[in-house]
Figure 1 (cartoon, rainbow over the protein chains, first blue to last red):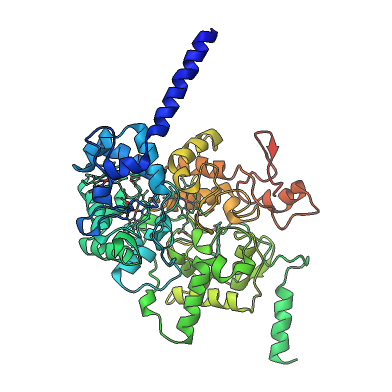
Figure 2 (figure 1 turned 180 degrees about the vertical axis):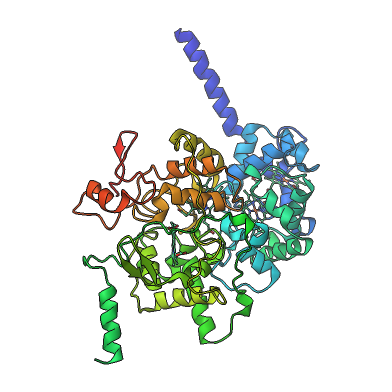
Length: 215
Length: 305
């Protein structure tokens, strides 16, 4: 009995050691244990700031829970992406925990907070701050927070991302390759936006920031 | 007696008889003629781009700012985490979300029930004291002036004294077997918690609420119209889940409204002699469906905080 308990404890210790052994900075800069888990930094930038020109998203300052969910969704195909699918599938749960926690602790983009009280004139600002309710499109900031800074673990920031990345995601929802949002809360909105609105609202959020991939 | 003093006298008369600091004691349900909202064309309020660039336009914009971000623009009158626009969607423009364009031209409103006439200013004051769990701004002060201007402008071209389709919240038929709190809890977890939080606490970004609290100290109080299950069911049916209004069945809207309103929230500011029972008898017993003063899960609701 006692022996069994001690072996158990030993096993547990070994396990928790291996959890701690997942070094987030090493995974991020050099890749995971499985070689298919390529170094994140190559595409997401040395500090997780993203690569605007290529449409690779910023990860610094995003919620760890949100990123964990995205990695699961890439692996399962709920969010279909040929680049991230094999990478997400090759990361162990411990590696996912470690790297997302590390990235979440980095600072997000600094931005002036613009709420719905602000005046909105251009198409992008109108969609962001007023919505288009006749098509059931609410103000983006009502869910993504003032200036799209993100809210909690389910609503990612829009500010800090490049216009190219933002519009690629809205188009992915329209085309059905991204269908991982809870209760289609985002999907129905993306599907109702016109091409011009997608372009304008993506530029609106991308241009709000002073730092990061949005510039 | 000059015009000014008689106006003042009139104003004094309009103050509630038993002189608490309650501006508009009557928070009973607004009765509308039940129409099928889908079958009607709604009134179209003017666009903000049409707003004139003058002193009037400026006042309207001030009113709009107070309405959508009440805590920033009228902080001294707000006692919870809400903004007017949280319950009157699309900045007070959305039909079936108690839009301001349908409200403005219906005041002063006569209530047979207590043989009183309530002005628009009093209605606005009432919302501050109950829905916002705060203090009534002065009826002749800048906050009420700005909100009135915003409402007046939204109602441009609306007929006076005529009930427009889309006013208030729709009537939703009560489920045949009554409401079911356990069912409501399930719907809440599946459809609402992602935004409003596991315990109805809402979600903030920095100091500001993005998703408002549905119950608890930062939500509307026991005197607010939204605490009535029937009123909440109407709001929820038409407006929630946010962006997907009209997707819940009538029954589900009732179950989840009842679940929401089976939790503690700030006290009814009209509290009679410190007694929940007396307050229930006076204000709640004959006004829609409410759990104020009822026992749920072994707890009497209505204690406040």
